[in-house]
Amino acid sequence: MNRERINPRSISGKRLLDTSCSRISRIGFGLYHKKRNFFKVTFIKVGYNRPMINLLSNQAEACSRESFECGSCGQQFETKVITWVDISKTPQAKQSLLKWQFNIIQCTHCGCRHFSGTPFFFEDFEEGLLVAVFPAMPDKRGEVEQSIREKYGYYPLLEFFYDMTQIWMLLYFQEHYKTNKNLCKLSRIGEGEKRIRTILRFLKQNPLMIDIREKLTETFFGNSAEDELLEILGRSIYLLEEMFLWPRDGRCICGSNFVRDFTCCEKNLDLAEHEHLLSQHYVIYCPSCKEAISGASCEHCGRVYTWKLGTVESYQYDADTEPHAASYSDSHFSSR
Image 1 (cartoon, rainbow, N blue to C red):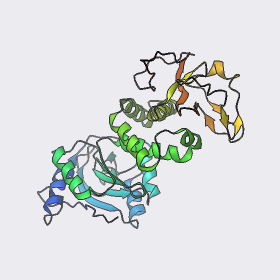
Image 2: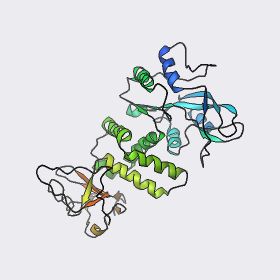
Image 3: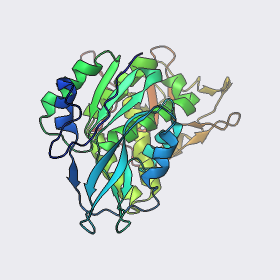
């Protein structure tokens, strides 16, 4: 796949990228500014952006030197920021994003560190995905998006994010599916492009993202326990998969007894000793592979159930009413 990167540059008194290309200029007008004012934020345990620049210097990634105004001392300073990154080739960048260290800049006068707020392109070449990330809403959003679509419409997947939480969650979902084999076995959202599209739709539409954003902020600033973050992240996986609340009678909506054939590593697991303990905070571990188990699928219809979203006594319904998968608004969680 051939691609043309936008390499921003500051032109005195103007907000342009390259006067030789009107299309790029239109993008630049909406994306980049010669000077940014931002409020003071002190990050705990974060890395200065220079190591990231060094890591990417030999990876054919794009950077830009831009001017900023420090929110602490008010002085002007210039520094490099990353404007394009392909995480399939730069695992360091992936870790930097997950640790909220990406495009952190440091004032050369007082040493205060800030998040640059610079828009950038996030690429996953292996997945055919390109995301234009705007930490803040750009001017003339419609024109900006249209210009990017015209230039990069050849990507199988082209998306726009206006919140760093969305990029963080995208990486979280991708890593989770790579490392959790039980989840992959139960997954109903497919693989490859199909899975990515489902994830992107969740990141853009699911109201749980509001709570995730708040919990991430609280956790990274030390105002919330990590266990609370892990709990809401786990819930996001189950909602993404459109799983159902766990029926205590072990009966699927289709009528099958899926608990009777509850297995892992081709061995039956007896849930009888766990039945009274099943709740949102309970995990069972396979004695063979030691993987955490929190649900099961019906071999007859393929529906997936998890007690991590809560439990119901049974799925009873008439011919005109089909029970639905758990959603963010479900309030009938088990209190046990």
